[in-house]
View (cartoon, rainbow over the protein chains, first blue to last red):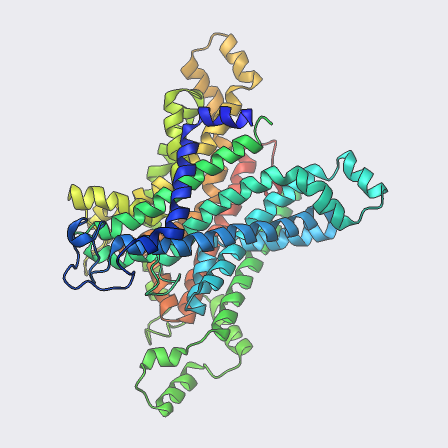
Length: 276
Length: 321
C-alpha cells in the first residue's frame, strides 16, 4: 500500500488517468438522464449550432442533434463492449494459453501454428471484414468479434507466463500431492501469474476502445441511430469546415478515454510487475 | 541446411495462411444475408432478370466449385472480374490503388521511422530526465490512439484553423499523385503519431538496456566521447529490436491505412476494401484482404531474415520469441 502511494506520487499522471476513467463511467451511468435532449431528437431550429447556443453545450450536428447528449450516450456502448471484450479475450486467452503452455508438446505445437495463422492477419482487418460481411452489428456480435481478434495476443502472454511458472518446485509438489491438472493450472499457478494477466487485461482495455471506435468509424460497428463515437466522426466529417465541433468533440472523447486507460495500465504494470 | 529449410518452412506457412484466409472469406460470404445479384440490379427487378444474372455470374454453382474456379484463376494471376462493377477486371483497379497506398505507407515510414528512433534514443540516453518524461508520456498516450482521432486533431489544426493543408486527400480526375503530394502530409502524419508510440518506446528501452551493458561501460571508461559511444557502439545493437518492431508492424500500418484513407477519402487499398465490403463484392474483397495479409506475412518474413542477418547470435530463431 505504501509502495502504491509512493508510485502515485512519482506518477501523478496515473491519478489523472484514473479520474478521467471514473468520469466516463459516471457519465455513462448517469449522464444521459441529466440532459434535456434525447440522442436522436432533431432540433430543426438549431442545425450545426455553435457550442453554447440554444442550450446545446457542445453544439449540434447537421441534423440538429445535440453533440453532448450523443457523446454521453455513446460512452455506454463503447465502455460496455470494451470492458466485455477485454474480459472475454483475457479469459479465453488464459484458458487457451495456459493449456498450451502447461501441456506442451503436440498441444503447444498445434496452438502455435494456429496462433501464427491468426496473427498473420491484422486484428482490425479481420474484425472489419467479418463484421462488414455479416452486417448489422450488435453489441453482442461486436463483442464476440473484437474478443476473437484479440485472443491470439492474450493467449501468447498467458502461455509465456505459464512457461516461466510451470517448472517451479511448488508445481511438482502439487503434482506429487495428486492434484488434478486443472487445479494445478488455475489454483496453484494462476495466482502467481495474475499480475501479468491483469496488466495484459488493462492494456487490452485500451486497445479494445481503439478497435471499437475504429470499427464504428469504418461503419461496421453499431448501426444508426444508436450514437457511436467513431461513427459520429465520419458522419460529420463533411461538415467539418463549418462545424468542426461535431467531429472534434467525439474525437476528443475517444482520445481522453484511450489516453487515460493507457496511463492507468502503465501504472498497473509498474505496481504489479516491475520491482516487485 | 537449416537456413534453407527455415525459408521453405516459412514459405509454406505463408501459403497456408493465405489459403486459410481466402477460404474464411468465401465461407463468410456464403452464410451472410444478402445477394450480390440483388445488389447489382437494385430492388425493383424481375425475378427472371435476377435469375439470369445469377446464372451468368455462376452464383448458382456450389460453394466449392466457385472457390476452385476463383482459386485456379488466382494461380494464373487472374483476380477475376468485380461483381459489383460489372465487366471491370479487378487487376485494373487493384494495382492503381495498391500503388497509392504504398506511396502513403512510404510517406508514413519516412516520417515515423527517423522521428521515433531519434526521440527513442534521446529518451533512452537521458532516461529519468525531463525530456525523457515528456517523450515517454507522448509515446504512451498515442500508442492506443485510433488513427482517425490523431487525423481529426491534425485536420482541426492544419485545415480548419490554419487553412494550410487540404481537408480531404482526393486526387482530381485526370491528375496523378505526383502533382498532388501535399495531400499525403496529413494522412502520413496521422499514422506517424500512432506508430511513434510503439517504436519510440521500443527504441528507448533497448537503448537503456544497451547503455547499461559492460561493453558500453568499458568504452566510456576508456574515455571515448559520449556521442561517439552512443552512435558508434550503442546504436548498432540498440537498433535491432526496433527494426523488428517496425517490420512486425507493417501489417498494423496497413490496417491503420484503411482507417486513415477512409478519413481523408484517399484513393488507396483501404478505401477500396471498404467499398468492396459495402457492396458485397466477393472477388474484390478476396483480392484486397489477400493482398493486405500477403504484405503482412511477407514483411514478417523479411523482418525475421533481416534480424537473423543483422544479429548472428540469433540466426533465424526470432519466430520462437
